[in-house]
Length: 254
Image 1 (cartoon, one colour):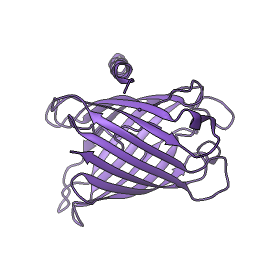
Image 2: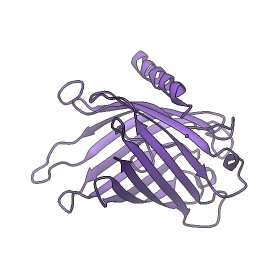
Image 3: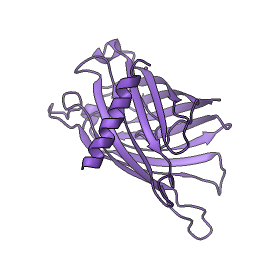
Image 4: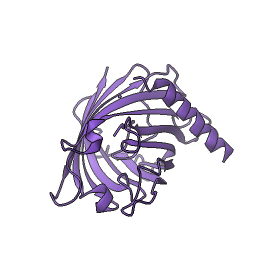
């Protein structure tokens, strides 16, 4: 428990130090953070759209444009910081304060010892309108690539973690705090079809607006450009809204 607390404290210190930089998403699977961290001096641009499958419900479509930058020159300890502009195009109170911030500290697989999992700690959705956009989600994650199975080079990567956010903003339909839970995911490059094709399923527990099950695929058009298309099922349609189809265009520079 003390180790987890220290990781949280370190991640939050780094976030506070870099907040002067702009739903702030760190490097993700589809919905939840991943243990991946942007490499030093890499600038990642993301253009995400969440399109409702039904017009009925309290929530509308969402646009999220963001930038994330790798800032540590080490192979075994990496840090990224970023910011996003997110809006729904409505008169939502959140749209009046559309800037959010994130940061993540991580280490890749095998960096601590042979066979060690990838580890990450960070925070995201740090908004600027107190009690409205300040979801202030902190998290820790571990991930491990499964070994080869017969002719299959790998069964993919499994990730698991825990998150905690603001109990005043992350609430259920009754207004009660629903601000913590588990983060789970599976992802895999479908190399038997093409090294450009990637699949993932991820899940964030809780009945607040961030609780969801998501699954989708990605195609890499080049080394630095890829597109994710996914379907998002929210744990509670009252807080998360109707399900969405998401497109996520990712561009890395260089």
